[in-house]
Length: 444
Ligand SMILES: [Zn+2]
Image 1 (tube, rainbow, N blue to C red):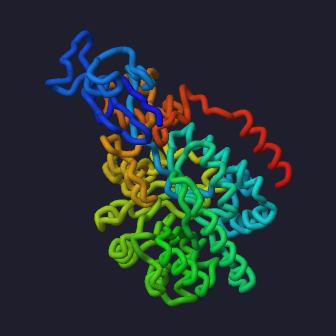
Image 2 (cartoon, rainbow, N blue to C red; image 1 turned 135 degrees about the vertical axis):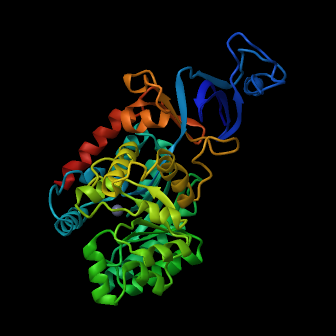
Image 3 (tube, rainbow, N blue to C red; image 1 turned 180 degrees about the vertical axis):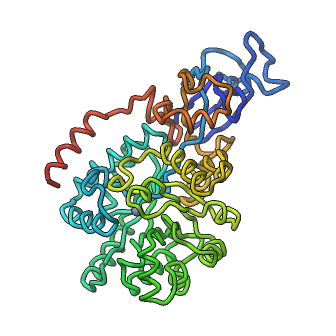
């Protein structure tokens, strides 16, 4: 495994050296003052460079260690997108400015033409886009997961790939999906450590009760995560009450589906009782603001109530057919602005809470030991370039980064201790776009 020394980088407001050994952050040391050299005895300055170099020497000859001068740059943890349908990069724009029900009917119609090639190239495009916007891990929900796994592995990211059950109450579809789920789970046991398999239940309105119970039991008995769209629209809640007499959250609770292994996307139309149940069952909830706004599903995500109840909150983009991109940086800004606006309270979603949703919260939902720049954590690091007008002021870095700058201020990205983007260049970009164009012809 390689070694990387990020010299003179700023992390948590302090200038330091970050030493990455293999796929972990081994050491974070105070950076040496210019011209100074304390030998690593008093403040820790120079210790990282000692570790990086030949034993016992402070030297510019660092052996196998790649030394990167990060003067003027800031380190942030890689972002975790907790709800995606990655291959839907190929479905961008298939239904614009239509209602949620018209939109989803159109999506399901196009999805009938999707094959493994589409999943592979669509996921490659998604990874490319996520790398360029600072995401190093994501929780996906789609079909033909081995093709997605190949794409993720080649791009060097982390992902939990959930196979989605969506039977539309058709017993033949239920049986076929159970077989597929079993087979794909068996195949996934050969996957490498950066990709994991999970089970998705599309939603309470599109999956039969028998299938929901089967999928949850299959996942739980194998220690797999469960992923579901939950209380996304007001119509979903009303229909669930008509059909089952209770809200979608209470319905799933009644079925015994909710638990700490469940990650629920949207949770937009939830009442106090729903929030209490989600907290009690330790469900992770994912806010997907751009998708909700675009499909006019709503915008009153109850961030404060859910946070105060102790729910693990995450941020997601959803698929590109609704949010149109996978830029979690953009999602952070939109989430904050919308929350402040509808609450009439500028403090409604503070910057540290926002970053924590997009990093630690997502990492917890995916079961990953990342989301913070700390010794011992997985080395998933963004290197932000502050040499632009957006960072001239003395405002706190996170304010400049989220409210003022765009995701293209992310200069380089390290995932699992390896560079996946250097100075905005991602290897294979042209080939990925060409491959995607080829398969797109088939979806027309
Ligand atoms: Zn979704």
